[in-house]
Image 1 (tube, rainbow, N blue to C red):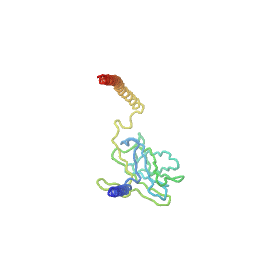
Image 2: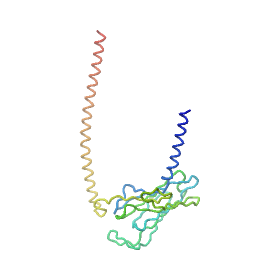
Image 3: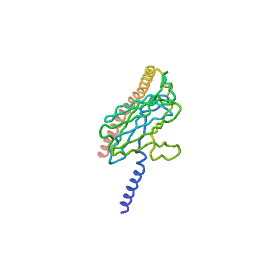
Image 4: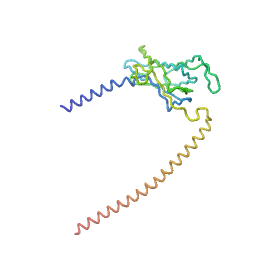
Length: 244
């Protein structure tokens, strides 16, 4: 009886923990595919989970920061969704590859052509973005999620360092340190150098592997011989005891 009560109590406690922790993960978020280095380009995914069990997510609007505008934003096609990119005129033009950029993307809207994100599922919306700013460690995006029952959830509260996460936090993209040499170097040269380094690393990695394989084989043969000698010795010892 005590064991069953303890098991039941443990189950209830586990359920409570999951129920309390679930909302912290069930919000619109943004993560890079790999790294989002300052001064470079990156592919980022906006992850949209469905928090409702009686409605589907049919629309997502992501507003881009105006204090760190991004001149290049390209959505990757997502089956069942239509993407619309909205641009706005900049108060202060940007310098990009020697050209003056007078407008930047201010919003990207995805609208479902079919059922959208149904209950129990999530959807990723990839974007290629750049160039990423070099004077900040993060970019804050504000997202609006619309459901098929016309409910609207605004993920627009900016998380503050040292404080608890807000109820409807805005997606935050953390930026990593700028890559050495930046993004202005020759792509072909970088590729050639990378290929050479990879080949060198592959060769150096292969040498110890070959050596260790040979050693392993020798040890394996020695082990078999020793094992065979041990068995033979055991048989002879047994015969001697029987004769005695």
